[in-house]
Structures are given as structure tokens and as C-alpha cells.
Image (cartoon, rainbow, N blue to C red; front, top):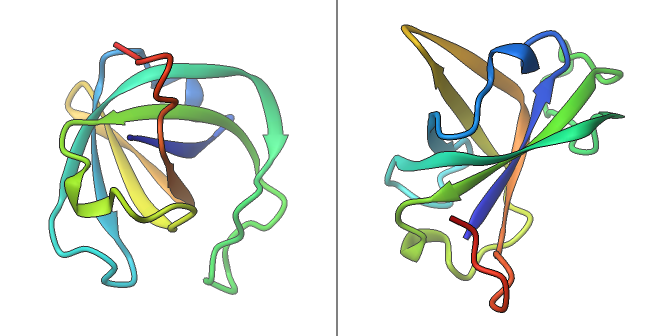
Length: 113
């Protein structure tokens, strides 16, 4: 299973394939803290698709989609389009993805490494 994180364009330069990520549920949909690795960094900049429930959040943020392959997908295997918080570890500092992310199932026919 993958998580699609929307990373602000100002932070995308610090994200690399292979970096570890921590995924948490902001609404209690799962209790565990999940981990994964960045497997793909998009090449196109979008306006964020998932709006934050924080009224002070930047609704017009420009983001790049980053795919993160979960190490353990059992806690979220039946959940799709769930908003989660993602923290990508970028060498002693972390890129906070304050734009919510959404776990999506990975295609069964094309496994990602």
C-alpha cells in the first residue's frame, strides 16, 4: 500500500527516493504510527487536492505528489482516501507535510520497490 503525500514546492528539493517517512492518523482511524520509504517523487507541481481542516492552512499551496510505500499496510488495508499526516526524514531535519496525505492501494500487477 502507498501513501500519496502532497509536499510543498518549497520543500521538495530536500526529498529524495529512499528516505524514511512516518505516517500518523489525525482523526484516530488507526492507532499505530506507520513507517515507509519514499518510492517516487512527482515531476509536476499542482494546487493541493486535499484541503486541510485548519482554517489558517494555506488553501492555495503548490505541491508535488510524493509516493511512500508503507512497511506495514495491515492497519490501513481497507482504508482508502484517508487523510493522514506525513513526516519525511531528510537528514537530521524533517519536512513537515502539513497538507494532508491519502493512503492509496498499490496496483496488484505492478509492485513498487
